[in-house]
Length: 501
Image (cartoon, rainbow, N blue to C red; front, side, top):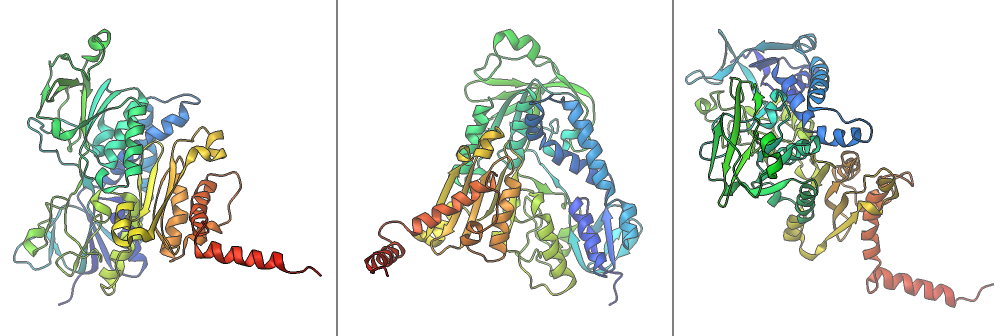
């Protein structure tokens, strides 16, 4: 049966627009269906706001900016970036843009209902944006902010609680601590437990060094939101001299992702031994995709709490439906979107035989300083390769450039097979997003650790820290007792024994 399009993208995210343009550039007939055109700019702004902690530290060396100033600045930048892939740009690139809710309906096969018409396609790509559902905490209603709705926070809260242990939760906690709020973070260790111990320990040390109180999400028995709640005695509360000021609630005006009325609220968080009163609550638990209202159950597509379940080909249980956003532990890492788009389009438009190389996917946490990673963790390497997996760590304070820039907090860690294959890397540094690219490119090109050792670099740069970490592998290869060391020693002994002419 003939169809209307080669590909229909069910979007709402920047990745959806990027995928639609990329497919159209290949000559495919493409339609993009979005519930709202403003969602991309809002999503970008919320993503930028989570990076404000890093920018604020840089600005503090000159003149620190206020929360309202950062909101205005990120709004301008996000609008500019969204305009680069606006509906008008999409139409000019040959993409049929439709601002409407789309839904699969029973009895219509794979036809998609969009407004008053039905669309058919050879393949469909689900590219919904992320949202944060509330954790299962008693009394926690919709009266809270999430990482996606930070742009709606009107005032900087004096006391703040962050619920969650995701990368977004860590970034948000550091953001408000840097801006001057008193922050308590209640961790759920799901994501942290999947990382290297050095990453988890370093993150916890950074939070404590910035004065952020740390608790466990499982300790919260109930949350009470009240317009007249007064601060109670608590080991986590502010000193008595500051309690009068801290009792002030801040005006909240939240979009459709939060609550839709302007009220003054404070929150009482009930813990086993005390009650913590805060002015604002931000929930940053595991994210989900906005795909639960697309009618996927009508066509047999399986979903879990995150969204559609996909294979390494980004293919759902239905062979003609693909989805973005499910790679790397389903944490909403936007950095991997370009790789996902490339694989999904190859499989949707050509033949579904291309798979994600998860070991070459780069992830980042917008903490301060930034943490990036690629490949597998130390625990995975030890489980798969036993003592053939070697781990090398280099503290950043040994790098002279980091010391001169006053950015010496961090580390470089490389996980390498004994024979030189790069298995993974984790870097915590002010410019780690740049450093990790060198490792990711080597992994994608199937190069060994020697590629990093031989990479050209300036002598006074942060790249030296990465190269010095790689040199530890070379040093271990030539350690006393190894066959390479024995061979070289025999060679030098032989040369010294020769009579010079």
